[in-house]
Length: 104
Image (cartoon, rainbow, N blue to C red; front, side, top):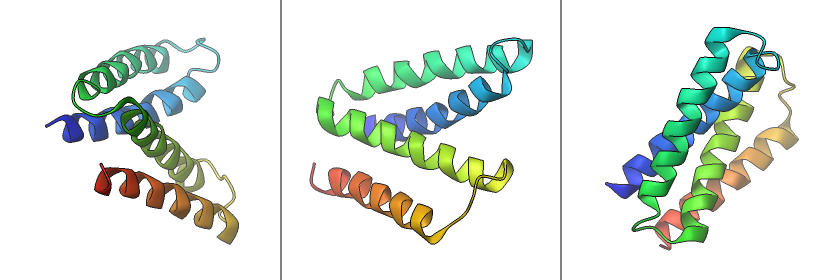
């Protein structure tokens, strides 16, 4: 169960990162509220997962999921460049996240 919560918390990290950008410096109400709720739920999920997943593994997986999700969102929705180098780097992060889970 802790791994499922950790994955959801990582996805919520992507949500709050996107909402933070969309809030335009907290000048837009709805994205600012989405940011706050997603942030609290994401950190709460991370805290819950760390009850049974080691600190380094849990945090690295959480950050990795958030970083990959945010980068993919940026490339798909906001026009961030899609290059072979970027895809290779994201693939390496994904390999590290999977490796941490498998070797846990």
